[in-house]
Image (cartoon, rainbow, N blue to C red; front, side, top):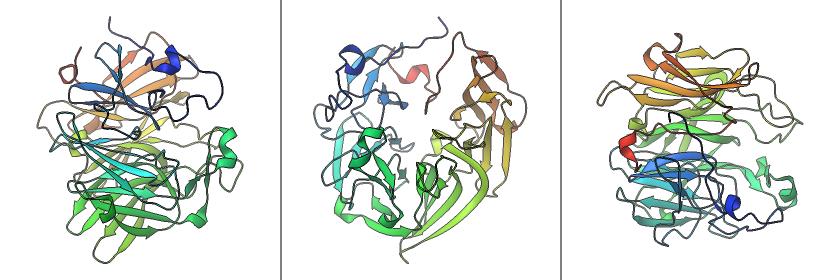
Length: 376
């Protein structure tokens, strides 16, 4: 069997509850529908506001993961695995009372070794965060929880008056040690990567001026690649736009997460905005983060791609020596396929195209998971 898909059998599947907000606050009632990440031989299905769910290499659901009861908050879909230490660095923001954010550190052997409350003035949507070799960086941006919008299904509203700032703390620091640096109001769903540079912290992010149609009737405000340089000594942030191409879902070679990476890969969000979401673009971008050069791989006029995921072709190879993979759906044929690109010859025709036996619905994130890294 070369292709398989399975539902993550959380209680939302096995024991659904009636009512729009039934089960709210129950950390076991997640969907596991946003990201898949391996750590310590386990495969985690993740989402925004609940505990991770474990699945095996055959995609069978094992159960929820709360690290023996030590994880007392939720975990978002965007933990980071340090390529040098093997630690999993994570956070939570779906708390309805202070502290609204928690920082979580998991050892390489899967033990929760640190959980810290981080004080921010209001509950905001903090979908992702940044890590470096020595630090973590939180983005306190003005997409603020609004109880009046709870019935809409998206209970957050962009409020420029809330301000925007970046919080920097050491990876083993207390939450009270965090230092904040103001930036222009904006929103970031996904950073590309971050790294230390002496006293500075450098971030590459997909930055958009606002979120969720804050000043218009559509969602045309999508992200572009920006560079933020935090001068921790001077207490200021230099904000630079790298490119005007619309793109998000940025990734790097996982061996460079939190380290200085030269190459970043983004999915295009080119297209007219509409009342629901930006049109997923039909191209992928590869950026040289040192020079700003960008290469495009066009997937097809009737196609919609997904997050580009890098897989190395050999251990110890060059940073871009490997493959970039994406799940593509062709709206003209209603057919899904896995497209595999040569990362070093990015604009060339695909090295391989794997036609899938059924439609794969649009998703958010994914990972390349070698068979040796999880239990089958």
